[in-house]
Length: 292
Length: 220
Image 1 (cartoon, each protein chain N blue to C red):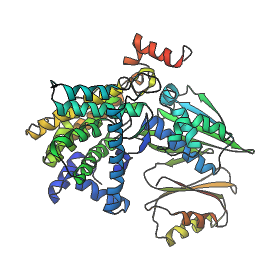
Image 2: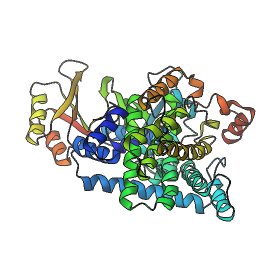
Image 3: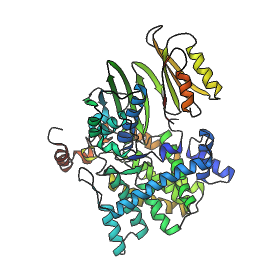
Image 4: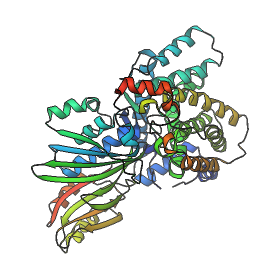
């Protein structure tokens, strides 16, 4: 099994195959499964993502707490009527990322990528980039294998849990995963995928997990929105040939160490950061009552 | 390496809102039910760390109950698990523990039915992946990296060899194995992590063996 990003890139370069192919072959070998079987499972995940995106941009979903919902749809409608400043592809990714997380917050069905709290970034960017690159179904499935490959490295060398590493481990990881996958879909090299991951994650380092009232809503939905825009920027940087001075694996290691040093109040306890603001506390009281 | 499959990262398909606090909690509950091999009448959930702090917001409570009722991470009934519990005559309680546990997302589950009880400690390590650290006071290291079978058996000679022989007959390789007992000649527990998936018929064959009390599979 590949252990590091360097390992993954070298495997792809040596065999002259894509990152997605390295991930698929490893999955077949380690779990003794056929290519078709693995593909089918990933396609089912893709279908779940597509349904969540479509639900979020067309329905005004609402979470039980009432804190989130309807913004994905609102943004989708805005970009249909207006020439957006940051560009329609970016806003489309943002709207679709938010939609997914709004569906998640409403206890709808989603696919964790790599977690539920960070589930918007990968499908949000995928279904937006799809409009421009017109990928085949096969290429869309491969997008998820690239994301999975970089998530796999991050999960094994650092963490993908907000409780263990803060939001940098969740939305940060998802953003890097998506950036790497966009690069492959756009025709970039395996090494450029790793560069995109490195640059995307670098700029997410230190991001804390401070959910208001302990709910996966505020600021999670909007952090996924910005994660999606961020992934697109990182992919473009990498495709332009720009490189991260700090290698991908060292960025992942830095993320791990920062997570270890992060106070517990800022790791999914709902005790610090935005959760501990006067407004954050007020929401908590309104939702759970004064006793909690 | 804690994560071994691309589907640990891209997946699971689940009801929101949290992979560790909802999907992971449901999976721990489901494993608990599988190990108990029945639906308990009464269950207590002792919550530690982040689970204790944020369980209501993340739906950890309904997910744990749902798991005990046998619901998978993507089962829409998870959201109504409290009503489902009432229908299924399951009573439950949540106990907030202030002790520091070795992982921030830790739950101890104690199940009871007709005077029989079982307890286990599970942790949710991120992205929906879980590990079981303790079963009825037996310490385990069920990593969740591999498919695994747990075999409760009488502490008698030949029990281990007979289980290993069944697996060998099916060409299933044992990657890691632990045996623990609390008292000589009484109940003992084998935890067997294997490299291949174990079919239902293999489990049935093992449960039919002499000295074997209970067989449960964990993870696909």
